Length: 131
Image (spheres, rainbow, N blue to C red):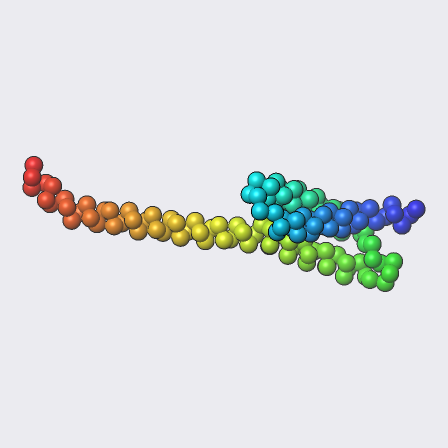
């Protein structure tokens, strides 16, 4: 009974993380954009819960695998590494890609505006002469 009460937070973390992994696999198979958006929302929700459970588990000193000989520090390090990798693949890397794409789009628009200004400057003397 003491074993289960003392390990609730880490068990909740691993459970949420398992759901995140399963949803990642399901998302790769789904082709519908609306369904992918819903799955992304659900992944984000479970990922936030997993992070919160991991933070509470680390602060309360709540390892699960210590009973089989794995030190608590290694379990926490593994959990933090997996959480960091998931954050990178789910949020940070797509965000970086969107920022790069937005910068490219902005530079194209900026070049177009510069070209329009240059063309207007070239035609300005002709327009002013006709008046």
